[in-house]
Amino acid sequence: MRLILLGPPGAGKGTQAKRLMAAHGIPQLSTGDMLRAAVKAETEIGLKAKDIMARGDLVPDAVVVGIIEERIEEPDCANGFILDGFPRTVAQAEALEKVLHHHKMDLDAVLQLEVDENALAARVEQRVAESGDAVREDDTVEALKKRLTVYREQTAPLVDHYREVGNLVTIDGMQSIDEVTQSIQDALSSGQGSRIRAAG
Ligand code: ADP
Image 1 (cartoon, rainbow, N blue to C red):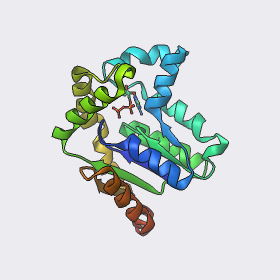
Image 2 (cartoon, rainbow, N blue to C red):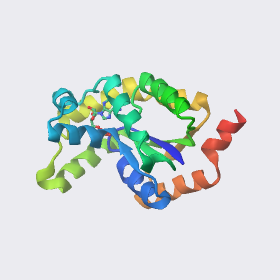
Image 3 (cartoon, rainbow, N blue to C red):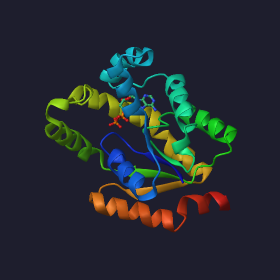
């Protein structure tokens, strides 16, 4: 099963990705996690991405597309994967389509976690409070504002993009964590994303 989790920062993509990973035995591919690892390891990509990420901007499309393309060729992705935080721009979505086509892979569903924007700041603040010393450099009020603006301008258009492609599944992300998991499970077992795609 190949899935995309789509939603603004703080929507709960990471939490649901981990649950999907456990339920389906497929890896979570988080470009945010991969980039943070690159920053930590001070690789060439990490050095380039560090300041961009800290201020809440997007790293260049070519960088993340390259990372994802390499990653999905790994053997643990043979049965599928969950993309978390990618694609984030229409250009990334189009590049992904090319990569998937090249590998004769198809997307099963794009799960959009829909949340009330007013709740997001509070969720990120809670994450900061809970993470103690391990605070992310971009979990500041200022960077979060920037990340939300970037989401609205560059990532939100993907909702329409995938609605047109025909595999968008909208999930109410304001429910409890367990309820969101259940809604996702229900949508997937009813074949929502793929059925719409097959029909369209
Ligand atoms: P969030 O909690 O905001 O969803 P992520 O962990 O997914 O955060 O990403 C953190 C940062 O990493 C982003 O603000 C951005 O700078 C960079 N990043 C992650 N994924 C991408 C991507 N697909 N394209 C460009 N930049 C990305």
